[in-house]
Image (tube, rainbow, N blue to C red; front, side, top):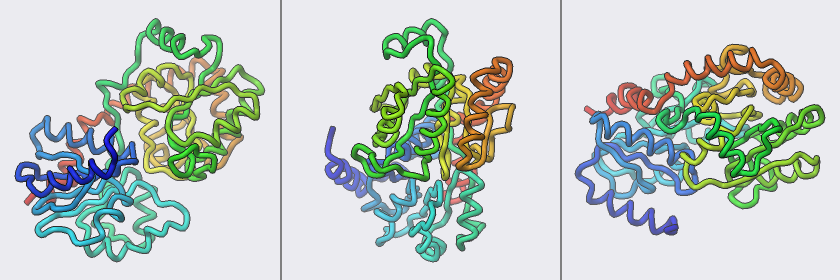
Length: 354
């Protein structure tokens, strides 16, 4: 894989000579979700002919563009210096963490940023509470590529599980995220992602049911160590492409979200699209779009007993489980990137295109 510095340098050169693209979506090299979101949005906008754009790892050299920093972190790294003449600036800010030092720059953002995009009402309210102007904030949820993320036939699911070495007689619970600090082993938990909550729930369930855990994503050391110490079997793979997740979702009986803070997560709609029932804490997008007992089940943030009870309902009540899966498969049609890209254009980019 090409080193990040070289990619960023090449993108900066492209920026200087770019006379074709109106929209430049700036992502971080090591922020996998942010880059995936940008690629989905830009691809759909180009296909639909709404606005021509591309993803870049640098904002250097841009002139007369709509520059969309795909995260507040990419703005802090790339956008707080001098921005070239005639550019319009958008910043995505998906979640506000406890004691968030980035909030110290709200005044700067109010002055220099044209629009702030977020994916849930919780973040919108937090940003307004901390001084961001309401008229600058646009809410558009995260989505999934519904051409890729879909329910596979039963025989295909069985084949995938066999190839991965997942037992056919166990309940497979999934967690596909980065929930350790840093980009190493992740032995120190990133508590806003709730890896401690996830482990508490799963370890408790494993005392009553034949559970195996399927993990993807980097920096999962904390979770793996806790599961290993408790004797809960797990499988962990780091995947190169988002599309690779489709097979893994199709192995699951339940997707469990224990986060304390999220802007999404995308795994909510990806689970829905692949026919996997979701149990989640009530924050981020789950708080906005899960209707309890209809398309998922939620519990309060940090409520291990509530999450465990909700998971047991999914495991033991087949009628409820099938109802939730069916309703979620209908609901997720609103969250395909082909639909949401139009929202990005109409609510965000079109406003700045004149």
